Image 1 (tube, rainbow, N blue to C red):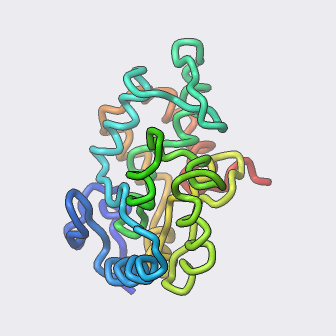
Image 2: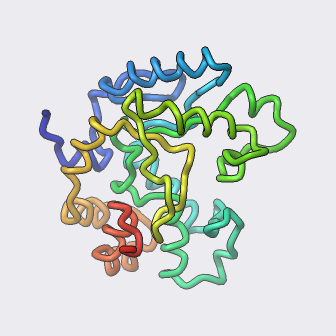
Length: 228
């Protein structure tokens, strides 16, 4: 098993990735398993495609900063928009982290995790696709995909790391992870390296984040939620 460097799990330097399509990259140990799962889904009439795969530290930073500045919507647990200006810095931070990881704290930094959808079904659906939970439930365009994954993803080595809302990250039925490969990155994580990366970054709300990081790290980065 290779030793994962801090710069790799933080999404700062990942030169081992392979192309997985337009604007998509995956870990080489994950790519073939994904393609095999994709082909199996296709045989069952499911058009399993990537929505988002690898994102580096800077990309995650841009996402976070846009939400902090009110340039992108912040959602509550039920995917409903919140009024950003009405939130305290602490409340705004927790609301953002329910759906969007801290830069350096995202599983998307590794190439082992990705978001999926049923492309054909969404294209034929009379609605605007927002990547929310209701779209993967009965009546939604990705319900058949979600059901297929529930039955088949484990045979290809994949699982849903956010299958249940524990009080931290919201439930994300579209987010898959390759268990064996991701484990190497999970074991490499440490709060000291994350703190150092954030302290050196241009992240909005830095003072609030760093003052709460000892609480944020287990709740959102490790996804231990509220401990229940």
